Amino acid sequence: MMRMLLIIVAVCGVLGCKAPAPETPAEQAPGDQTMGSSTVSATPEQEQVSMTGSMTLRFFEPAIGGEQPQGATFEVSSPKCSLLEDGVWALTPATAIIYGKDGEQTTFEAGSAQFDDNTKTASLKDGVKVDIGAQHVELQDMTWSNEEGLARSDNAVTIVDGDTKLAAQGMEFRSESRTMLLRGVTGTVALSAGGTS
Image (cartoon, rainbow, N blue to C red; front, top):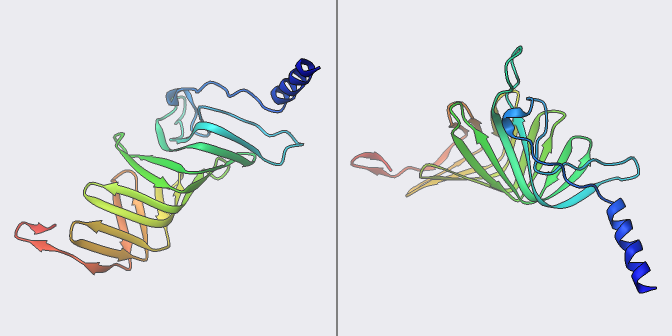
């Protein structure tokens, strides 16, 4: 009797989830596809699909004419993700990478993220952090627009570089030039004989 009960539980568990699809290399994916190491789709009966295990979702440059798909522009990965609705994922915690023009990578860490394949945007929040050279940057949140090729925040930004400490009311990070433009900057800049530190 116990063996039959275990078999029934195992069958119910198998029917209640789908096996992850194998990851497709970034070079083979078209620009408008969400790629990850796992793919889960919701049935009409399911309001939300949650899963554990590493997942990576990516945006790509659109293919031009008959050319091969372009490289990745943005990716976000997490050990835990949930499908909120068709094409919209929630990830907790999250590591995001913005790819520059020549493949340079800028890595952001966040407490949570949302990846929207419908609008080709992704948002990071709950303590966003990034190191750019010697500068340590902390943000409340950040939104990536794949169409514009930039990340934006309209909330508080803090930048620390040695004795230099700056606060800003917003920022834009451009992937092509790897530059961060700050708005409403206040703070202290440390000067040395060789220039700013």
